[in-house]
Each structure stands twice: as structure tokens, then as C-alpha cells.
Image (cartoon, rainbow, N blue to C red; front, side):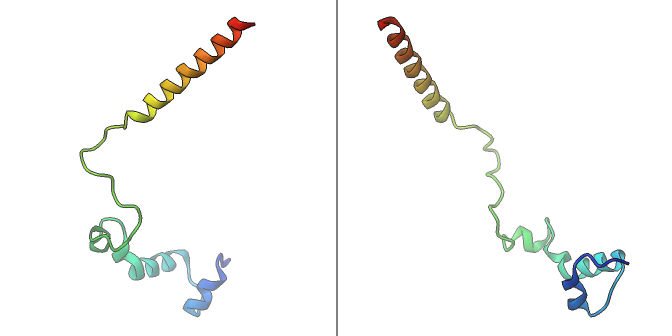
Length: 83
């Protein structure tokens, strides 16, 4: 058996199979998995879930981009006409 993480041997004091390691992880951290009470109460931290029912995309970045492109196009057109 090859030990992938030497620190895991130091923590457990012995080498273990992958199945035993998975079971040890499940027993230690199973209550922290997504959907657990720990996760639902927000104790897990992170960015949180997006607001429910608000799937709209903001319109203002597109409006600013359109204004910028129109101004750039007008500036290029005027410059080319002067030459």
C-alpha cells in the first residue's frame, strides 16, 4: 500500500486501506456534508445560496457596454471622415 499523505498516518498512527480511510472521514465529518443540519444553519460559511426566485440578469452592464461601443464607433467614424 502506498501512503498518499504522510500526515494522515501521523494522525491515525497506522496505515489504513482506502475504504477504512473513507469510513473514518465519514464518521468524523459526515455531519458537515451538504444538506446536513450544520450546512442548513449556515455554520459551514462560504458565499451562501443565491436568492430563491431571483434568476434575472442585471441589464445595466449591457446598457453601459452598448453606450461605450456606440461612442467608440462614432469617434472612429468621425476620425476616418476627417482624413
